Amino acid sequence: MKGRRVESGLWLAAVLSLCAYGFAQNRLYGLPGAHAQPELLISLPRFAQVLMAGGDRYLAANLAGFRVLVADTERMDAADYAVQARLQSDIAWFNPVHEDNFYIAAAILPWNGQVDAAQYVLRKASEARTFDWYPLFHYGFLHYHFRRDPATGAKLLLSGVPRATDVQDQWALQNLAAVWIEKGYQTGTAAGMVEAIAEDSPPGNFRRYLQVRAARLRDLQHLQDAVTQYRERYGKGVERLDDLVTAGLLAAIPQDPLGYGFGLDSSGWPILGSSPAVSK
Image: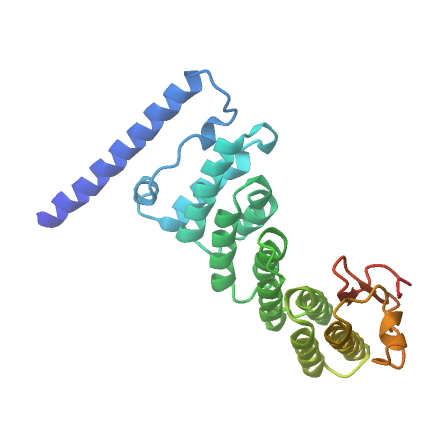
């Protein structure tokens, strides 16, 4: 008898939730306003969504996912994207393995001011989809591009390497991680990390390529050390890298095996060249 009362109470709550949702949707369709997406105007609590799905969290995820899929993003505003972000976060909580959800989150949410929600969806997908490196790639990209944190982005890329079954995918992840490492760590630390990636790679052209990237970082470190010595000796910075040779701190400016060379930033600090043949 007690079980029947509990069951009746749950179904009553579900019916009331459904009625409230339908009433609100009906009212909103008739209201003037800037919103173009009525299906994205309401975000129900998670327990209500599960109740409306008959207690099935996976069905609740699919229902919320359908609302996201039918939305016309070309007509959405910031408020619509905020609701979409909540819906996609709910989907990630109901069913973190949901493939469409993390792809849509990566493609739409961060570009429309919803970086936190996109990170939540991708983190949940990365944890649940242990067979899939794609969520980690997108999660890493968010750190690199939106959070300006290439170091964390590189770590996420490298954690995806064991999941990749295609060696070309593994190399692509390692190569991109090496590029981000160069931007996210002190030069000496970055060189050591790229050397470690090379050591973990199978013998061949890709390993040699990574070793070249590490070697140019070591050359850059030597340039930076020489500039530090120059500043300590003369109380000023260098105007050209050749000043280090003139001062006797280096025998010659190293040649970049990748052809981009080395240069100076606006503060006179040695950096990797951004285009071929920029050595000074």
